Image (cartoon, rainbow, N blue to C red):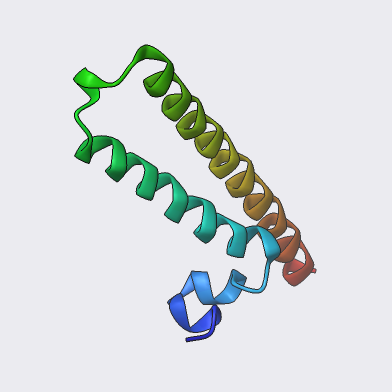
Length: 84
C-alpha cells in the first residue's frame, strides 16, 4: 500500500509532504512505546529504566508537535498560493 493510499480526505492532499510522512512514523513509534509501557509492570521498573522510557516518550512528543507545526506552515503556504 502506498503512503498516499493510507490517508483519506485532507491527509491525501498533504501526504506528499516529508513532514506528513514523518508524522506517521513518529506517531506509530510514540504509540508503540506507550503501549509497551502500559503492558509492563512499571511499579517494578527501576527509576532509571522508567526515566529513560519517559524521556524517549517526551522526545517523540516534541517531534510530533514540531512536525504538526511544519505541516501547518505548509498548509498555510499552500492556501495563500491558492487564494491568489
